[in-house]
Image 1 (cartoon, rainbow, N blue to C red):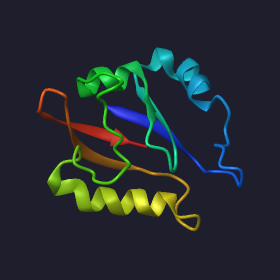
Image 2 (image 1 turned 90 degrees about the horizontal axis):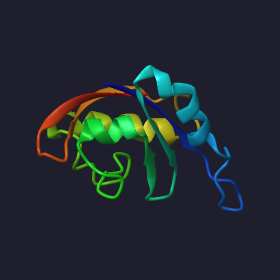
Image 3 (image 1 turned 180 degrees about the vertical axis):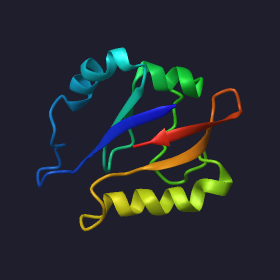
Image 4 (image 1 turned 90 degrees about the vertical axis):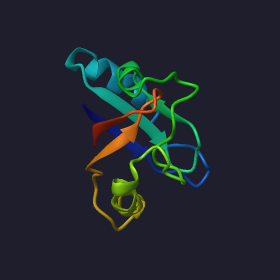
Length: 117
């Protein structure tokens, strides 16, 4: 499964820039059968579309935020590389996009490959 999403930088006032970005992405991608995520850097909460929750076999309340430490939901063999890619993507001087393929643990305890962009 491939997923696309956004990091939102925090403004000086501590508010996320981007407004209703998650809502707009849901509308734009609904027919594609792809999943989307939306996360404001610095917040624990992350939005996952219904498709991602189904793929991860979990509910909204039990879904892990893959981008927060520790990255226990990411397979140990990909964890170091995943952490480096996330750190680079959050660096203001880093790449403008995040892109990685990794295995993530499902709510049922299995592992599934996920393409995160």
